[in-house]
Length: 404
Image (cartoon, helix red, strand yellow):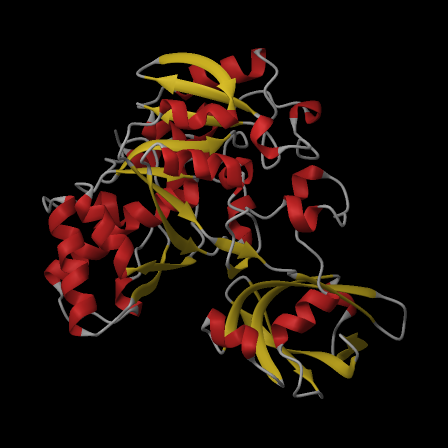
């Protein structure tokens, strides 16, 4: 299949607004679970997911945490300006960014930008009893957003605390509602740890501590990695063919222990969510890069959108993971940190992911292309079943287990 010439209109289906779950169920693990096994479709309840997984398998979760990425300022004229954080610019490291205590810079989307032509925006805040003035200043355009400098006058307060005090949770736009206090809990996975995402890895929203304990009790090996989900995950494909769609780039971080676990499991994994898929499959192409260029820098390890299709490799997944371990040993790294822009669509050859837990995705989206590639084009059978059996769709909707 010539992946680049896939027509996105061939990946459409009727999704009425009333099929989109606006809120989650009261109990996460009571959501419906569609099970697709070797072409056959059935359904169950999510809490029974461990029943379908092989003993001793490796399950990979994305432990990213959604940040309060929406910040509102009001100008003296009364105009409301929304600043939406996309990715850190200075410092560019996420962990360092959230610990800064006087100033930092982000690439942002700005709502009502035409009303903010010059000058700084300012708010007075009280952060856990500590008073400060918080300012935002435009530096200029960067990529598809604006580079914004944030400054505050109390060094006892770091940027993470400011966001928790003034920021708002960026729930998906297709929910067509304002965020609520309950979203601060329900729009995070129970295992979220590493701040940085502007959208949740929603396949993980179904897991409860009880389901995780059940997985452990059945001998399922659990590992975590980090991919910080960017706002680009909601960007529709507007080109007729996907060759014209530019994938967004996202930060990934994978511990040495996770690479070792993959090797111990013959480089086979059950991925929780499309973000885990994108990270795991990117690891293979990072290993290929290191095989060809052992001294590559972290920036050079970035996986480009069309790399799997333009530069296919005969390297085995095991050889690729071993290349990564040797690289980490040479540079004394506890974790591999880089970024990926990979697009996974029909024609893609999966290297590591053997089973996938995922929600139901928007029509004509890159995530639907990823699912189609995983089930060898059989996505319509899955989605027709979900539509005709009252499944709930998108972020707060129901889930599926896909076993091709």
